[in-house]
Length: 415
Image 1 (spheres, rainbow, N blue to C red):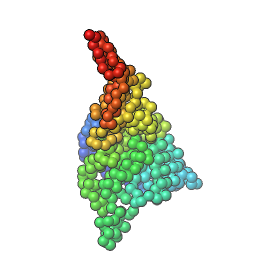
Image 2: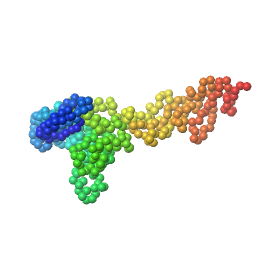
Image 3: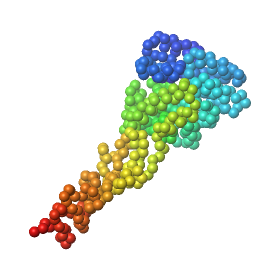
Image 4: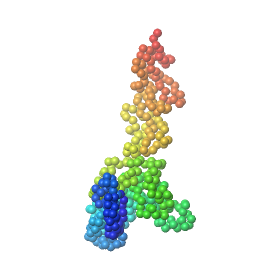
């Protein structure tokens, strides 16, 4: 499924005409069933998003009462998305409020990519449905403006919406060309690379949560002179991005990658077309939400979607009838990953301790239920352990007919 920007009735008609030419291959997304049936039907879904020239649009919408007619016209043509112009909600005309309410009443997707942080905040408060940012540009450097932007994106996440990172930089391409002409292209920080892009995807994930981040190709990815990294320029760019997210230092699980690669956007589109409110969207996510932080002694296990104990600091490391004992276990692959947390402890019964060689709990006193075999009697002893063997047994097992000599710590059979 892909979204296509249309800026006139002519371009809408062209998309519909092209879809008819490819009948049996494509479908214009108009209702929830169109999304739900895509996988079974093997059709390619096209979601039309309206992006009329905003000066012309707001000249046409010169009064609040004109809003239903203007939006109704594009809705009838099959448009189900709308790029909200960067216009304040608290101006005298109240047109932005009227547009938002009309989009909500028709269950149309509201894209706030072109809005300022202030307008995004207003839209998040006014809208009754989740919002979408289809184009979140990679920032050049950390700044106060970027902090404001992230705060606005968090407002989008709080509606149950999604923010799409695109492999494009905030600075205009012209400045990159100027730098290249000056001989600085090889070291220019304005060139977008796959490492910079993947780092930004992960940055959004850490701030917004895995359920609210997606990737998007943007408008001109195949011809953008900012893209000098072959991994992004190639048609296999998304496979390369997925591989980077799965590898160090990110270690994303396959399920999280599929969310970022399309499932999150599909969920939001479907919820809006179904008429679900932002409260309902957030409530559905809360049932399986990834915790922001895990308790001491635990790390998030993305395979099981929960926090798993990794040390005795965790209160849930061992059952009540077991004793947690620290053990420096070597992890698979030499390091711990979010997919496979590596517990540094073992749960032993009373009278047991860790065998540092095997990591298993072994009896060390007669308190251990399995200290001695059947038809033998357990006697506690005092044995000096070597420095390398801290788990040496402190007991002796004698045959039930034998006696135990405390002086020699040996079993003596009757004469």
